[in-house]
Amino acid sequence: MQWFKTINVKTLQKYNFDKFNRILYATMNIKSHLTKIFYWLIILAYLLLFIYVVIRANNLSFTHDESLSYAILFDNPMAIQTANNHILNTLFMWLSSLFFGNSEIALRLPNILSFGLYLYASFVIFKETKNAWLMALGSCLILLNPFLIDYFSLARGYGISLGCMMLSLYFFLRNGFNYHTFNDFIKDYKLTITFGSLAVFANLAIINYLIATILIFTIQYLILKKKSPKEFSKPFSKFVIVLTFVPLVLGFIMLMFLKIKNQLYIGEKTLLGALNSFIENSFYFSSYPSWILDFIEFFIIATLMLGLISIILKKDYFSKFFLILLLIGLIIIGLFFEHILFNANYPQDRTTLSFVPLFGLFIYFFIIHIRQFYIQKNTIIIGFFILVALPLFYHFISNMNFVYTKTWRYDAHTKKTILMIDSYAKNDTKRLTISNEWFFEPTLNYYIHSRNMNIQPSTRDEITLDANFIYKLIDDKKISNFDTLITYNDINTILLVKQKQ
Image (cartoon, rainbow, N blue to C red; front, side, top):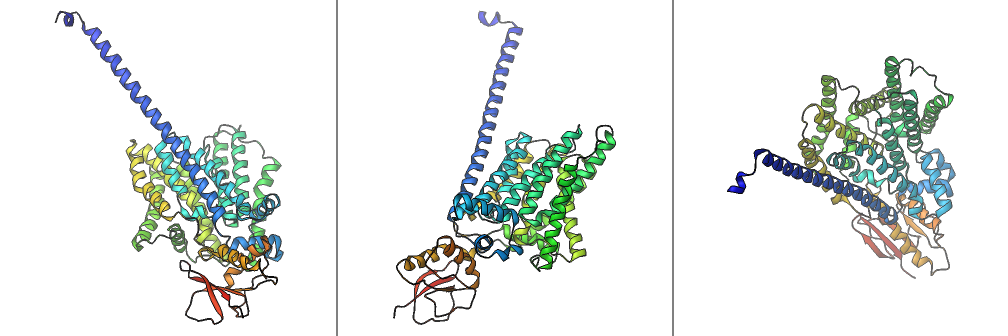
């Protein structure tokens, strides 16, 4: 008791204060370590996703449209005049073939590397918030779409265009409206347009994105010029003018050429049809009740409207949230006017892919907007993560595979089929023949040509009994003098071999 009495109040207060500081420091230190661990887990997830794309690119059978692109290079140069010729993809396929050969993964390498661009751009956009939960949520929104991931494992222009577009979006959003010098503004403009133009040359459907970004930068310039007339009254260089107009003119010429050739026939007749196509393809191979499609459709339309209303109410006109909403709005307006003026169809199927990162970023910045103006606590982010990111994660995991693609599922076993035929052809002095359904023709010929098989090229003629092998859809028709080699019940096809006489 005597010892206790000798402790004065100040000493006790100091002791408690120091203890509190130590506890606070330890707590903050734990949080800091947990945040770092969370960031590294996100980076690990990015790496695993990239590995998944590489494995798929190596394992998946070549597909119908990929084989048509291969034919442009080695078999049918006239196909360069079709919509199948995604210029940048065709060029990169040729370069990759030159250095690495004609294997599936070699020809798909440009798209694999484009996924690296897509991942990098996603990472640098999300890390600016310095919030691990937000970064994880944003990553789920724009990465965990199995239909989108398909195209980074295939030799088509869509993966290249998405990678370039995502990098363009990073430079588009990097500074928002916060430009203090003309040079900084022009630097972001040039990088945005450069990668946006590359995206257009990989996939012409991205041209509305390029036009929209140019319009938005023009609006930004006029606002900045009004605020700082001395700094933003400098003349544009000839390079900037050329960079602006040449890709637009070339893109317009390519579109008119394809229109004359009657190659622009794919598409939806309404905007709602385009939205439904986007959602249904994102479902991939999952079967969900119809009300889920209706709910997602309503959710997308409602959040776009609510986002616009909230921006007006809060006068949040100089945010990245407003920029991404304005971008989506201008693209939709562009699609509408194209439909009215040129009778053009709305996007469908794979031409809707660009809306995955656009709408994902919209939701991401909407949550930041809500956190800034309505609910400042981190619980809003965790809540959205549970409600949105976890279902996306489950959907992606349940659709992971190394055999099928959504658009060309029928080609899942074409590689296995032709290799089986090749095992017979190697032991035969004559070139064997195959009769097949028309849609198998490009892929069969890719393997026959690229691997120099002792097999006659496939045709699109009707099934004939004169061939050594028949690869067809399963039906009730019995074919005499042929034995079954293999049946693929998952895609409803069968491979037959002629009986030896």
